[in-house]
Length: 160
Length: 82
Image 1 (cartoon, rainbow over the protein chains, first blue to last red):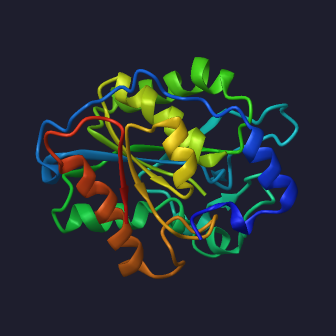
Image 2: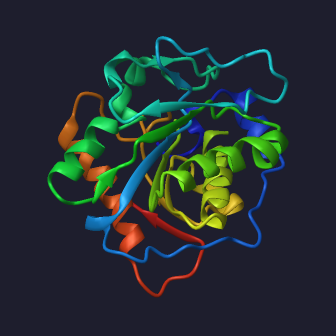
């Protein structure tokens, strides 16, 4: 695993010709404090939403680039998978959303002193975005602003 | 697509002064997109922390990723295999 062999022929063909965006120049922020003092936030692209939040819109051409804010005290087990992709097995994240949004693990790391604090707010995107223009222009800067406002030091980003 | 999406979000966060680490499930995509700091994991899509309901295993993967933020004297892109 860890490659495209698990995908259908059509998906592999699409990925082969897809114009992947190259990040250039690559921004780089070194961590300037011990991890044990750092405030950490999660960003998942598993399309998870809380029961009272709107699901991601599968009809948006190029992919729904919006995001949901998930608070630090959310019940992870109650999160709902609304990722549109049919290229992966959803049963794992549906059974245990920590698999792609490990908020419970983050609280454990804070409790054990491995990280400093768990951020108040975390973010959930639906990662199947083939046309990432809106993501780069609007959603990602808006998401970054939230984490800046919360004085987040480190973000862990988890795809599916 | 998720691998590109986390990478593009990470780039924006780094521009705003937040240290990031991405888990990636497709090494070849990370090699093209260049997330600033990434841990490649050889798991199935949909299983970025390997196993559901296995806190110890999930935590081991997270700790491997978080450890990349503690590396000194490296330059992007940093792409490390689990």
